[in-house]
Length: 104
Image (cartoon, rainbow, N blue to C red):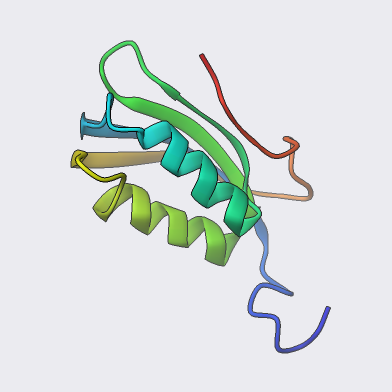
């Protein structure tokens, strides 16, 4: 990779997340999927049974960190994020998902 590529040597990471607040019914899963796809992050997202958003993302650490920030502080229009939990952080050799999907 080119040396001016900011993620060229970045490790691939995997993390699971749960977002709490008013996050269902405001296209949160669609915005999450679209943003992850634009960043080249793979994984999945879905509405949880307790009114939360659940998911898993895998990709270069700088891009995953960017999504962590978005999931914690920005979110989709009209959403209200109370807090976000990120668990099972790990460095991986390759992504375990093709693309990024919304699960039901």
